[in-house]
Length: 199
Image (cartoon, rainbow, N blue to C red; front, top):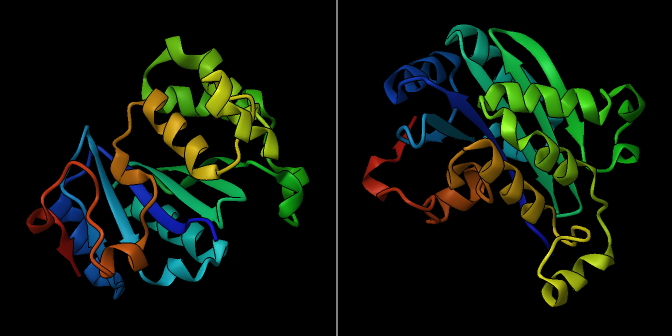
């Protein structure tokens, strides 16, 4: 069984402000301190894997905090979904396997998704590398990565998520963890457990 997690990463906000909004909304969540300019939220309700709820939370947080919010959902390491929001508006969505979504044919093309994510990061020099990460297939060919030391495909979507956040300058707190993992004792890489706050 692969990884199952959801989270929302917020750019250039304060942990205390995020906690305040989550408390007002009545959400149960863990919130990281600022790491590399981002605060990550692990919300209990979104860990039920309802993309509508995840999108609603990300949109609300981006609106209330006047910021960028990148929502992530990894479903059993088979599908990675991302939604980018700014100031309460959808910027773009991405699905590693569009056919897994009822509205997958309505997702923006990879060129537009790449542009939005690169603009978010402020790193224009990574555009071609981000595009390659987004377009690689999810397949058993990912096993060959161990031999060739290059990503020919993705066997596990956590690998794609890890590569993407690295290129975009996001912290590792955004990869591999959701509320369930953190609640069981997993701590985001690079932070002390004591700095992780809970609503």
